[in-house]
Length: 542
Image (cartoon, rainbow, N blue to C red; front, side, top):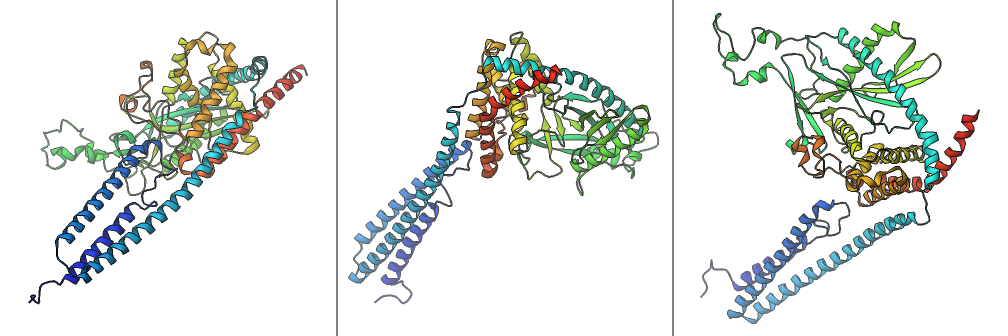
């Protein structure tokens, strides 16, 4: 007679069956295509290792499931069960198999549809990639005429413009220092010239000069910069700037906790240490309820300071100075009485340690990697190192090299195309990055001026390849081929590469628009260059 508390065979069989159904359902969930998609077009190429691990995990689960089924079937065959128990077990087995088959059919249907979508996108890219068929760039003769008559004249204007901007910026910054309070306001240093105008490849009109101005907090405060390479929570390409004051410095010092005698002094802090740290008039431009420097507050502070400085020296000049737009700290516009206009950007930055890297709040033509970045995230600018590279690499190239000519022609075509089709996800910084990579990948002799047509084609093809792959690595970050003369801090030299085309992976609409704009620019290249080459002689003859 069976004990009242002992489980019956029916109950055991039902529990085993439910367990088996539960196991199959769990396996189906793990294999669900929405949870672990195998054809994920939005995953970067660097995640292939993760996908392989997921597939191995899936195969391991299937193997364990098979072993469990064999073990349970073996134990069932060794027991002497009534016929109705066997029939009940067969029922649960059939139900489990049906559920498993339904899940597998669902999965195959989903993958088939996903494959079709992915295949459709590949067909579109292949169709766009064939745009080179039947497209010819201008020949050597036409390129030479265009460069001599259009590009060289723009370079001559650039030389005079940047001389004026440098002199006026120095005067404006000196006036800015005089209107600031040295004890409570930020300390402004001398400007640094960066960007296309000072790298001798800017051709777009009106000409715009870019200058950066390092600034620092008044004593006893200081900045501590933290780039993304030292903190994983920070967006790649960005960094944060924390403001440290006397309270932070004295955290481990006994002078802040112990009352010293009148004849005793702290060797780490001066006598006026405790007086300065509580100065309520000091504005450190931090984000609300934090110790991190705010890009928005720095922008407003700098615009206010520039306005005060101009009001002090405006009587010395016979032109008007205004802000060309207010979403940048120092986008200034000089207008002479003759009607001539000169524009330049003077932007406050924070130096990273003792290097030539600078944290910058707003930088013209700089690609936006993360739209979700907040006002405490600063872009890390490598502009000084890029200018140094172009200057040093020129020493290894032929005397009459064509590397800057290629970039100038491509920038001209890009700007004209933007006027026709509107802006896209492509910037002149991307064009410059393509050239920098090519300078390291091709022999020096290949950059002779007689090979201008070939190198221009190389730039177009390299940019096309990067667009189709949605991958254009930053030239400085994680580049193992970088020459030693650049002298970049090792922490950035050996880190992971930074993809400047990351936004194309996440934003399909922007990507399609940018790709279409590129091929339109390619098709219109010959027409634009021929047109401008024919117009210029007539203009010069008047």
